[in-house]
Image 1 (spheres, helix red, strand yellow):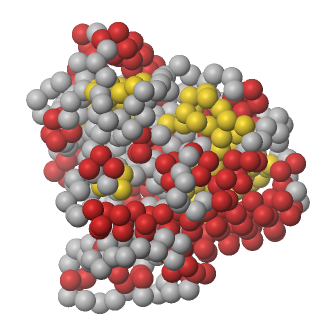
Image 2 (image 1 turned 180 degrees about the vertical axis):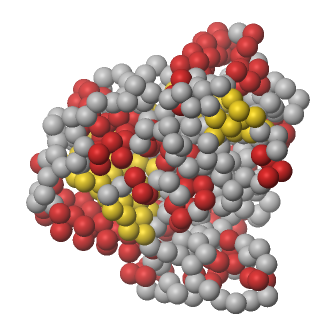
Length: 482
């Protein structure tokens, strides 16, 4: 048995041909849909980047208990379980967050890993400047890195996929392995070879704008459209890389015995709803509703759509089941074998969100955004034995307010630090909102329906309890009186 996972960062469902986009060039994603089961109701879990990776290792939501951070000592990593059962696991990636404090425990769960430098704010190439002597920002690192990335083969994405293809050529005749090919693209900034930009000719004489900020849109329409074209070009670049893997699977006849999963961590707003980004605003469909494709050589379902409600927490469960291994008792995700084979239901509802954000629940038809009911958006704590943020350890000032919390059911008897966390009042001001995707797929007109809201509130409450959410979460969202 063999398995491949191709993972993109910030891959936009609404910019792919299989999901109805008619202006972004993604013919290889169309090919992929012809060779796999395409899921129409796939949603994120924990957001953003590294919280998603924790979900993808553990098969349970991490955002209910902490924000960006490493795998914890008590976490069950499906990748490590595979490795410990003599399933060879390998990661090729240009995701530079694995090299930072907050992502440093993930890649070493694999037997082998290979990384490529130069994405976004990767502190890669040294260029001594007075600004760089201080706290150099990620945009400065990006400007330096671009000087060393000129030919298409030098792009981190190109190197990542080339390494994945070389790995497959070297190992395809072996058995019992899992390869994860993971690229940071099409995450912003939209640095992309010229030939993909040329797919989207347009008149524009404004400032260079390939890295949108995370805030409300303030730019004129022509600048917004230019940025969308740059994002589209990067999606087309991702599509071309995907095509090379599909071609290789054809050549090596890997479809006969190899599981293939293609997914992302979340989408991105490129001016839709008047926003840039994926964090400050409500998690609209462009952010939360993700593309998801699976080929299972056991059922050989290809070219079919699936309506089962699935999430990234199902990926580790699917991998373990495929290789005949038992799922850890704390894993909440479900194997997708039957969902792929005959669209068997996986769950009635799903939670998603970010640690210091709203709480979301969907049943695949309705999406419910529940806002904090407390004035400051709290109380909020980080529960961890690995006190690191994205790029730094917790400061002593943060830890002075920490106390030792009783174990949660999934921490294997380990007490954890309970650290007061920053709350975002801006998010608290966004109202509780209900959308009906059946009649309002673009989420332009919030729905007023007390019965649907009550039902989704009950499902949200059930899922929060099932996932051992801390007690203050129920207070924060007014679920303690439901």
